[in-house]
Amino acid sequence: MNLPDAQRLTDSLRLTSPKFNLSGDVDWSVLLNHADGHSLTPLLYTTWRAAGVLPGLPDPVRVRMEKAYRDNEQRNAHICAELIDIHHLLESAGVPHLVLKGWPLVERLYPDPAQRVLYDHDFLVPADQAEIGHRALRAAGFRPLPRKDEWVEKHLPSLWRNDGYVWDGYLFDPHYPRPVELHVRLWEDHWRGLSIKPLPDVWSRAQTRRVAGVPMRVLSDEDTLVHLAMHFAGHLIEREARLNQLLDLARFVQRTPLDWGRCLALAESANVSRFVFASLCLAHAIFDSPLPPALIWERLAARTPTAFREWLTQHGPADVLTSDYRQRDKGKDYQLTFLAARSLPEKLGIVRFAALPPLGQLMAKYNVRSRWLGAFLYPRHLAERLSLYGRALLTRR
Picture 1: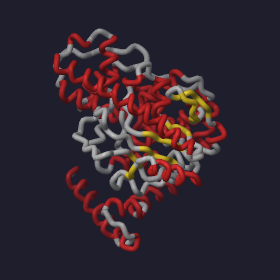
Picture 2: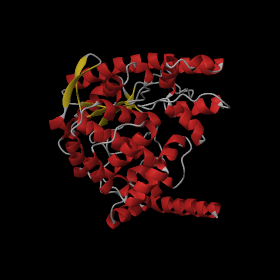
Picture 3: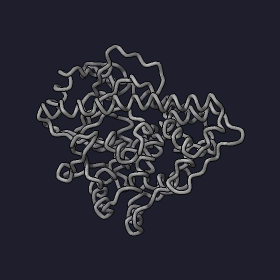
Picture 4: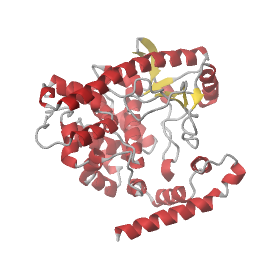
């Protein structure tokens, strides 16, 4: 996807002075595939319909976009009902829980829930009660996904009600089963070898809101800001970022009165200020979302390594706009992780993570069950790494 065409999508979603540049030579198949990949098609359909530009598009384009919107409308009705069901299941099991992102944000940020594409349910639960919640969901018919992210420590193995469903690749299929993740932390400790810490005391700041008509607990607004920013920045570095995630952050900042001093303190306590800066910087550049007050912005910038700031300013917007999680750049994840490192110990931590990833990650990668056999996977992993980056160097030359 080239940059000018990608901007045709996001320019019409800017928070101020949106632009609708849909004329000229457009490869609509490529453009809509890109919109689909970034989960923007249903929102673009309603935005372009309200702006009166849909009649000027080719008939197949309008039909395809309307189908995505209608299917997502049906899909989100299922998601809303399922959220209430899961909430009551956890409540009946006596498991405290906070609803993360997802439906609470949809109701706050989008006048029409069908505009926002959702793929799973995320809940934060106390670590000592997570297994109780997991068993309650399994007793209600949820089953583990097939060997998905078994090495992840921030949440228990994902569950869903599959009932024999086979996905055909259509991203807005209303019948696609939604995974459920019970998180015990908001992100991985020491993520990618960096000195990343948990957010402190999130339960004490949690709020009760009516979600889908039912009182549910959610993160405080300041914790939500840090979580959304860290979530997008994490996907950016992992090469899985979607523009709808960044738009969530942009709309949240625009519409939510925030205690920016507390946001900064929370980000610093978890050592994620650089990632809050990164996401806010990109949300402003692409969607023209408001920036924090000047003093807060200066402190966030000061906590961000210069090389990372320069990359975000010079290359970040184009990278996000043209990225495709289905075609990841080999090695770019480590390049960005190194740019974000704030110290030599962090850089050494990144090297260690690259050479010696968690054993569970290697076991999942190579489909090995025994932890005794898993120890022999490290030589294989190192050999593959050396071969991969050796070929990459030769290709660049």
